[in-house]
Image (cartoon, rainbow, N blue to C red; front, top):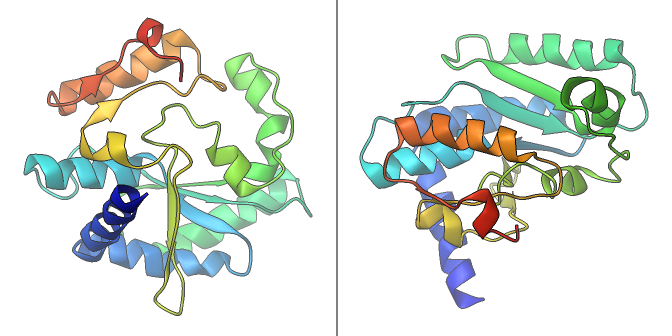
Length: 198
């Protein structure tokens, strides 16, 4: 438990040292009062870059911004948030990917061939993300307090370890993701699908 607390402190310290990431956290507040997180790859890859001595934005393809609004599951409502996000993030050099996790079940089967039950919360959505290391959400509250959600802990992040979270991802998709990441960060230790209970 003490080690996890130190990992958390180190994580928020790394976030604080990234001017771009801090700017992203501040701009993301347009989603309040809805529950939201900056999530997944953008956070993890920022840390990988710091740990491996690479430029802050190296290898980062987009910023994942997730929120939870079960009161309106329409495509139109999500599109409005996406449009507002583009406006709020104008000038940020990394593309923004905004998704209402409350409506993922409406399109997930068509895209990935897996039937998905509606998520009960934003945290429940993060619980099912493809790898244990990228199952991570963070936001900076207006008070200056950090809200971090990491259901599998942070040890894999600092050991540059990637293992599957088998809640939803297929073996083929896991292999595709990890091959892409390994080509950019060869230091990563990729745990084979077969060797993980994840």
